[in-house]
Length: 354
Image (tube, rainbow, N blue to C red):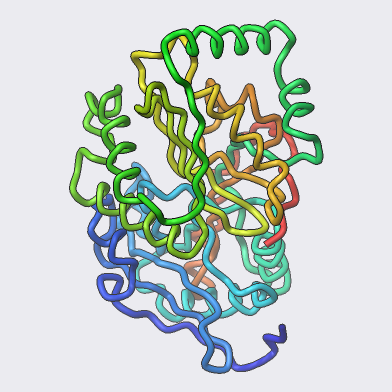
């Protein structure tokens, strides 16, 4: 799709443009935000929410930064396929013009492979613009040509697979065990309520970090899942014992990939590893048409999923020079100081398609 055409970015009020569910949810650092709208020949081709942040983590360094909600696990801008280079050119030109007191542009939770990343590197090189990855981490990814059974065998030792079968058998002794997989919107409201209650029963509820702990995050979850289900872009996976949920997983389907958005399990059944048993069922994603990979959305070095999913996706934070020569010279000194520490060695990321 050609993008060698007039393209521009315009800022609109974040409070008017962000998804209503996300707007209702509390989030750090949202003040002064805008949604950047990228158009090609009058057609919407990209979106990126940004804020003017007065601090760079613990340092008083003002910057333009991409805005990522606390319950969003990837900060990639939404860009039409084939328009990635044009998008970055337009974004950086907008940032140059609107720099204000900001010393640089900071992009959070950006995938460090794939068309968006490659296009950004291309634009930085062609413009001679200083910029670098200042932080990176690898998280679990499911991407393989193996069958679910072969993948499980390759991931877990024979001893661990035997223990998992034993736990499954012991769980069955307590009553009727069933696995439900739903892809439509039927019963979505009731399913969401079950999930919220299950999550709130555990440590997140005690810590006040469960989705149900705040009206905003509750609404974000319910409305996001309902919207995705209505478009056929949600898979709900549930492990039930005697009709009640003991492990649940919500995954967004965004061909050619998927995102394991939220999962919860009943901690009173921890001895049976219901979360792992559910993830064993989730390996069916490997055989799902149109899905080449699934992002765990988990933290790096997650104690459970890292042992089961063997591939890794690397995401990171970019800092990029904006504005005139003096501002860029100051940024270059700041960047040199920040990147002076050697970056950790990470496994290569999968080269994911758009």
